[in-house]
Image 1 (cartoon, rainbow, N blue to C red):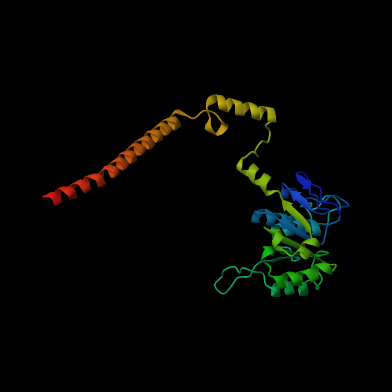
Image 2: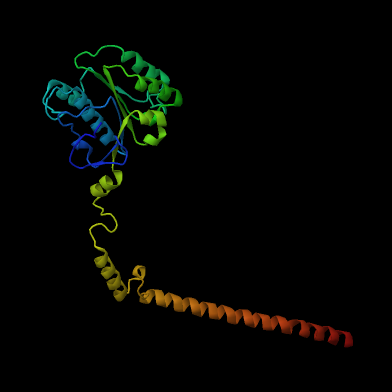
Amino acid sequence: MPCPRASEWLLTSAEENCTIKGMDKLVFRPGERVSHAYIVASASEEARRGTALRLAAAMLCESSGDRPCGDCRHCRKVFSGIHPDVVSVAPALDDKGRKRREILVEQVRFISADAQVMPNEARVKVYAIHDAERMNAAAQNALLKLLEEPPASAAFILCASNPALLLPTVRSRCVLLRQNADEAGAARLGIRPRGHGWPARLRHARRRQGRARGHPARGGPRPAAAQALRRIGRAFREMLRHAQAQHRRQARVRPHSCVRGKEMRKLN
């Protein structure tokens, strides 16, 4: 299955995986089939949730053109968060209202049972599992059975910050959509990758210029303050050596004078 086309998308070496620079650019062209299971990987929870919404809208969209169109009733309901056939699953809360560390197998069994029920409005039901890497081993194995033999009216979106924590068998049955976090984060912070945009000849010229200006990080001579510190260090070491030599001389003289003092006391 070809990767959905969009501006700022890159196709990785994996046959059905995509590396995404802009997750908000996700769109399926006419004739492109939507998979029944995706893994959305990104360090940003906002990016993961936004991409899950776009995938869910594309799965339910009624448009004959690009999907999601954003205009049909399914797209509007999905983006408004009120579509009855989009089910979100996340780590449950404990008795104190805190989020649990794991997604339990009971939650996946609920998905498996609910997937057997026909959708309310659309052709399929979409199950978005947030923080999917928090599923324990039992939950992932239960989900694996569902991915191997999915109902015709069910689709799955697994949102994970680290998809490597998912079982390899689970990953192999999903299309991986990964955000290029390095470039996205650098662009967001205004950071240019090292060497990017600078030809090698120009970079070497800047290094030579740095040596001429005396920049210590570029191999030039040390600044005056560093040279002064080195002179102070040499003077301190010389003074220390002189004091140690004087102490050794005194140590050699002291035993002789002590012996002479004992002899003088015996004579008296």
